[in-house]
Image (cartoon, rainbow, N blue to C red; front, side):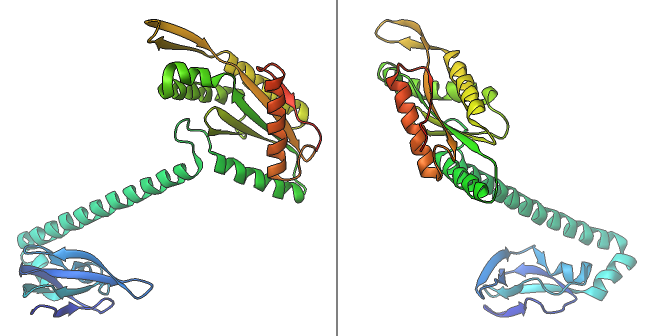
Amino acid sequence: YAKDDVVFKEGEPGQELFIVRFGKIGSFVKQADGTRRKIYDFEPGRFFGEMAIVEGQPRSATCWAEVDSELLVLDGIDFYRLVFEHPMIGLKILTAIGKTMATWLDESSRFLNDLVRWGETARRRAVEDALTGLFNRRFLEESLKGRFTAMTAGGRTFSLVMMDLDRFRDINALYGTAGGDKTIKAVADALRPALRDGDVASHLAGDEFAFLLPDTEIDSALATADRIRRSVESIDLEFFSITEGAARKVSLAASLGVASAPIHGDTADRLIASADRALFRAKEGGRNRVTLAEAD
């Protein structure tokens, strides 16, 4: 085959297996948009076209000579004749085909596994906060919008809790960003037992957290918020103080604001604003407490 000669085209019938003696044979498939996608290069010692013999399938790709090439051709009839009349030769050919197909399947499997892992990683990046493993702000906001849509269709009420850590800036100032990150992770770990499976815990930024509580009335939301507050209060952290030259224990506290829909807001933005105002009043009122929003 001279350079650019076509050996066979995608979709054509065929009963031959080809072995590359020298040169290089390329293969491509046509994509839905009409463009070509190269899938493999067959170099000396490699074979192709075996599926036409093994399964009687039409050619799955177009193959052409990328450079001047010489191929050995084994017709389907000759293939089966070798298998039956010269079983040892046939066995060697079948073994070679099996190994090659296993290699291709293994390569395809690794590719698909990589693709699945990439997709999972991308999905997690889209909804998950990298530092804490909790949901991120985007997911919280989309969940809130979905809840308001469901409420319009007759869905039940739900509540939102906003939380800030008290005096978190002091921790950052004394122990740096590493100390701040350690604190945020410890809080995230402590929060999980305080929430139900269906609750949405989100890390918004810095020391800001938010919790969407589906199907939760005001009294239950206040009780959950106080349970969260006590979980944070129970955390004991230890940091090494460079100035003091010794380890120092640090206790945490949090202020929380609670708002329920639709009483405290009939849209996602209004509900968030109501919970934020309640959080501000909790801080102004002395910190380490839960405050309910005022009716919208």
